[in-house]
Length: 162
Image (tube, rainbow, N blue to C red; front, side, top):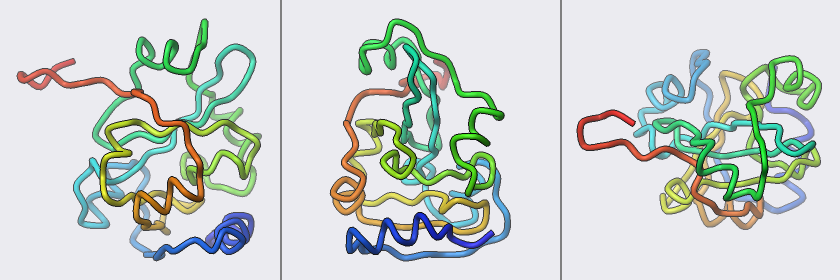
């Protein structure tokens, strides 16, 4: 599946500056980082949660996990859970499962960017499939995606644990 037409039209309509690379199939954000020869902190994974009756799209670094104790107060949610695979198939019918691009407005979903990832100079993410990746300056991603920046991930301890 090539770069989705919906994503291409969206980026073109916003005059977005980006590059597109193609690599062998990579199913996790860490695999994408390896395939793209980038540190995992610069590679975004898109996580969708369902909370208080709505879906929320989170953009977090590949080397971190969503912290639901941080997430609920940051988004003002009483409860939240990960979206199921069936929900993801329904929400993102033009994307391969787990490869949705981090632009919530494409799908009518609120977009949140983790503050740690927001501090990186650039970002790369899946382009709707497991082979194509979009690279952008973080300032360009923030201009086009208009995410809310919040603390969403767990901080590792010095011993490497949570």
